[in-house]
Image 1 (tube, rainbow, N blue to C red):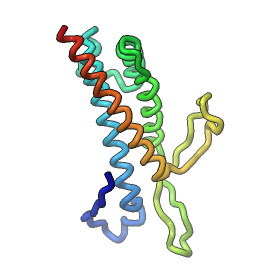
Image 2 (spheres, rainbow, N blue to C red):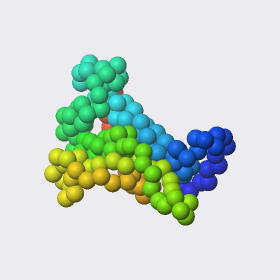
Image 3 (cartoon, rainbow, N blue to C red):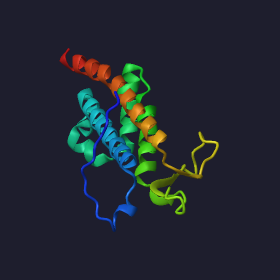
Image 4 (cartoon, helix red, strand yellow):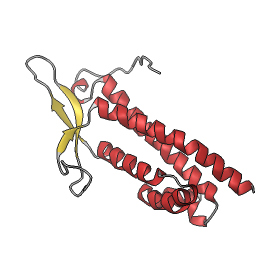
Length: 170
């Protein structure tokens, strides 16, 4: 579903040059929000396993997201034959590339095409990437794909939640 977003944010003339364009800012915010939504859904699903106290909300929030991958693999993927741990781990890595990016200016000043974007880099030790340890711009297309991947994982988590809930009732 496509929708038009109108921004009524007033930005002072002396600060507007340091912010990305509205659509880029929107995609950044949407990327972080949908990941947080997936993160909450993962915590909820881990809580439904009911296997150990360390999988309740209070413990998981303090444990850090990287530990979720192990818990998902041990308690959900193993039990329900899914590959959610790998997908969540990939999304976590992608989210970290966005969060830990740094602002840069691209374009030409002469033709007024300059804009602020985030620059990031691939992990230096990622064996799955041909171009590991390379800098690149976080593009609008990458953020749109990230959002789509988060939505795909959410669709996979819905039946997992149903199976875990029905298993706990039995």
